[in-house]
Image (cartoon, rainbow, N blue to C red; front, side, top):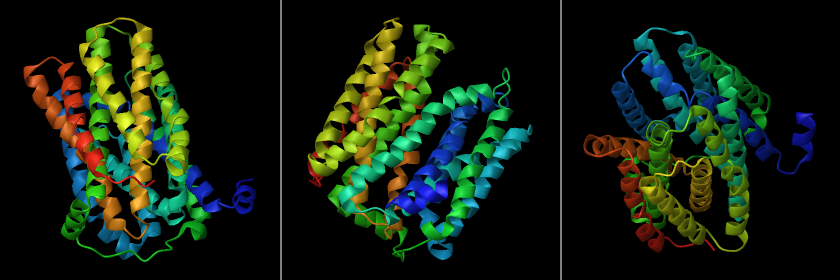
Length: 392
C-alpha cells in the first residue's frame, strides 16, 4: 500500500519523509514527559536539573561539529548510525539500573534526539522549493506535532506505578518503523547535494553579518526559552501552587497541544501566498508575552481558565514555530549544512539559557517569577523582527 502511494503521488519523497518524521517523533516524544521523573529515582531533583543543563551544553557542541561528520560520511549513512545509537540509548534506559549507565544513556538519548532532526532537515530541504517552503515545513511539523499529542496518553499505558522502564523500551520499538521505511526507500532519499565546506567560525560570522539570519536565529532561540520555562515549570506551578490534580493537568495538556495541529499548515499557506512571515511572528510573540504575563499574575483556580490560557499560548507558539521554519529555510538550501547546524543550536541553547536563568530566579523569588522574567526576555524579539526583511 505504501509503495503504491509513494509511486503514484507527485511528491513521493516528501510523503516518505512525513511518514518517517511521524514515527521518529512518536518514539522521541514517548519518554519526554517522564524522563525527569525516571532520573529523579536515582538522583536528587537538583542534580536532575543540572543534568539537563549539561546535556544541552553537550548537544550545542556536538551540533557545531556535526557538519564535518555529515560531509565525510554523507547524510544517509550518518542518519543510519544515529538511529542505531538512538535505539541503544532507549534500550539502555529501559533495562539499566546502574545510575552511572543511566546518566550516560540519558545524555546519549538527548544528543541523538537533537542530531537526528538535523539529518531530517537536510533530507526535507533536498526535496523542497522556496515557493512552497511554508506549506512543506508546516505539514512536516504538523505530522510531528500530531505524534507529540498522541505520546502522553500512549506513554501512560506503559507506566507501571512509578516504574518507567517500559516507556523507554516502547520508544525503542516505535523507532523501528522509522528505520524500516528509511532502509526500504533509501534510493529515493539518499544524498543528492554536494555540501558546502565552511568552518564553524566563518559560518557563525557569516550568519551574524546577515541581519535576516541573525534575527531569525535569535527568534528561534527565544521560542525554546519559552518552551523550556513553560514545559518544566507550568506543571509544577499548577500542581503545587494552584492545586490541580495530575488528572486535570493531563486533560489541560492534551487541549494545550491542539493548536500545533490546527494552526501551522494554514499559517504556512498564508505566509507563502499572502503575508510573508513577519506579521505572523509579531502576532505569535505578542500572544506568548501576554500569556506569560497572565501565568505570572493569575491565581485563578478555574480549570477552564487555565486550559484556555494554555491553549491560547500554544496558538502563539505554533505561529512562531511555523514562521521560524518557513523563514529560515527560504534563506538556505540543503547544501548549506553549516548554516542549518548553527540554526539548530538555537534549540539546546534556548533550553540551556532558560534553565540557567530559571535556576537563578528560583534562588531569590517564587516560581511564578520565572514566567515574568521569560516574558521580559521575549520582548527582545521585537527589535529583531524590525530588522529582518520579509520574504513576501
